[in-house]
Length: 284
Image (cartoon, rainbow, N blue to C red; front, side, top):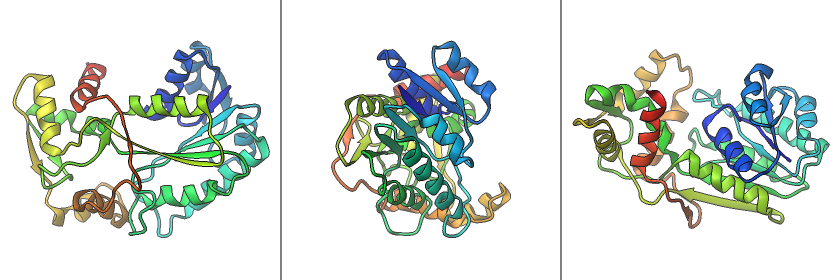
């Protein structure tokens, strides 16, 4: 049996579906029990546990052959990432108490990069979970293709506004469905000690490629427009951010090329156009 955190999100859901399709037993770890009911209907066990409760997490992880761990999104972290340090310690305590067979953490491309930026949160989590006394793996995927779901309303109107720039600069991207498939493979296959798995899609893409893919899927022209770098901080603060610098530096890292893989990534099959077609179909 495999305990899956973040199952109500894109990646956690993809991991769970891949395991279920393989005939594996899945335990959905949810904060709100009601959100676990659709997964119960698919044959999953449901365990209620919030990220703030190490004992509840330990109960949710007990008896598992493997645990899939995800951080809740936080695009506006306080300086020095206090919430991540606290969550990492709760995850570590819960896993040591429950003693599952292995733990797989959804990390990110660039988790190893020392330059201050938003993705340092994954590096901090890797450091904490690296002290576990059972096999632990870090899955480091590229930029999610499904992040382009934010661009769909604009694409329907004929333009997208991008923080990825220059518009023809291409970065590694990958579909969440491919992340789920690789996570399933790792959990079922197992590993010894610590393991890092990096993952990207079949080719690299930029803002212009996102616009062109949406144009193909939607059947009308779509253009990409760059959001000027000097407007980012004001824009993020208008959206409620109090600490926008880590997010800004993350975007700089992708645009300038210093957020990169540490080794040679595995290459997945799903193209950007296929991923965006799924986004459009789900929104219909």
